[in-house]
Length: 129
Image (cartoon, rainbow, N blue to C red; front, top):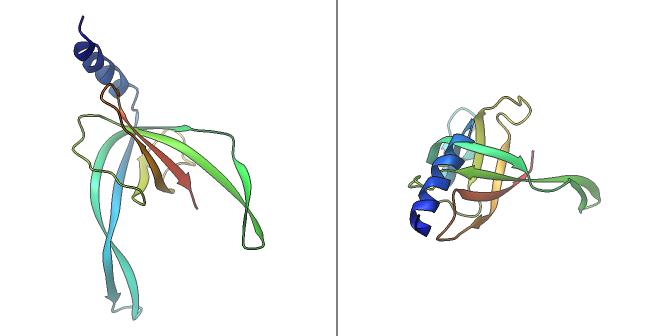
């Protein structure tokens, strides 16, 4: 077995573990909402499909101004076959999961793991909800 064939096999196996569904969106600009007369962000969908969400570390308390905030980080894996060009600042939203607490939460991409031998695109995200 060559390294490339082993990686392809690993990618297929990793995809089988992706039991959740998510979308990745990117802010593309702002527009005036005529109903509220306020500017609102506009978004474009970069990826929609299967994914896997798992906690990265135990949550930690951070200071935001003078308020203590709970910071939670996760790793979201999407298939390597995805054409998505995910960037820092993109928003991951889980749309289907056995865990109802994760569905609909905006998770902000803060890092993207790169590598020739990766079995999945791994996105480090923060829960800022």
